[in-house]
Image 1 (tube, rainbow, N blue to C red):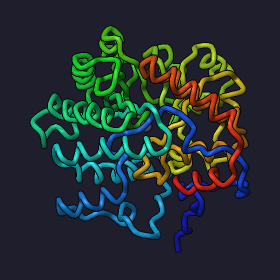
Image 2: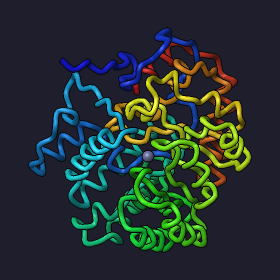
Image 3: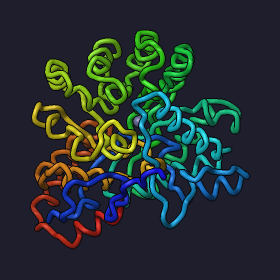
Image 4: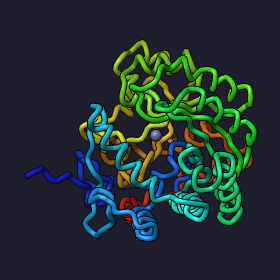
Length: 380
Ligand SMILES: [Zn+2]
């Protein structure tokens, strides 16, 4: 009989917590922060996926079926079979997103959920090619996401910017096409393209082939935010630093395996988007206590916590801060530091940063509130 995955009964994060004792602290849901690593389909609520699947007549596997006792699948994506399983689940979820209404719903719900967790600025990452067949091409697909990002930003008071992400499993010429599209809609506020990324299996594709796409995005003045150092080790981080010259790296955590690379990352000032829940769900680390957040911070690397794919990993933004507190021992000063790094590593406009900085100071000067901290754990 297969072993049942261990799930935290408090934050439902699918993460093996080491301590289990509640750490007194301030309410993490009211900690002002930015969310810099969230994928479009992966942001979906599991209940929304169930409704879309029902509507479009798609039969979902057990691992993606909403139920009271649903637990996120435990995957081992560091081997190719495990990654294939992750991608298969992701593709099935993506197959339930069929048209403008579905796409608008995903953007809106991602913003609503982030806003409820204290996020002031969300950068949602989308690969428009996957949705293009249902809406008449990659341009309308991106325009729908941008338009809903603009609308929901005005409605909620959270800013939502969009990262256009190319995929390593597609031809590098596709990446250039997406970079040109991204630059056409480049901006600096909600409802604009603020970044260009590169995602999917790090073991696929040859990095220099994607450099021309990043050059297009660089000339267009948007942030460069590729994934690296998640499935592959420190060499992938150093290669990405030198070949793509990014502003941030998605994950990058495995740079700690080589002190020289860790130093190079710290020296570069590049922000790492660290996603502890994702790392554990994908088997990059055995437990949350193994995520090398302390090593990164000690080396002086700016870190922004992110949820990556809450749909598959069962944990949203606040849950990442809960892990940092409960499993990695960070106190409120350090947690506020992470939140500040997320804000200042983002592309949020200056007025958003100024206000968030003031509110962050107020959060930290307020009294610790154990009851609120516990309720934040439950919101994961
Ligand atoms: Zn990611």
